[in-house]
Image (cartoon, rainbow, N blue to C red):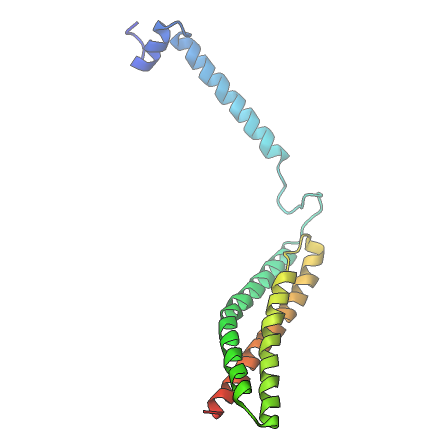
Length: 172
């Protein structure tokens, strides 16, 4: 039994398992089955340039969708960290409202507080409503609308921050 290529195979031959030749045919049989299974899976896969319904996909539209999606996420990631500043400024403005006796100044501060509150609320509303589009057909129009929405929220946040900082710096 010491004629085999390795001790492992000789062990199997000693305990009554198939001979070395039988193992080679078994390995070859398994390789052939694996190759056939792989070819079957690849042939059932999605063809390039077609969606799951078999319709031709416009790769230019697909790139546009990716670009719009990246633009939306970039804008969100740029503005979202500023929400902490919005909340901090709102607390400071509200504290000034409590200390102010003048009606006109109190009204101006309340408008700034409202602008900060609205900016925060609109960002949260947008985040809850945003969804990745499912189909390419509706994706372009949906994402174009979302770019406008997130830009509007961005401008709201930035303008309310600027307004609050101007007021707080002027009131020092």
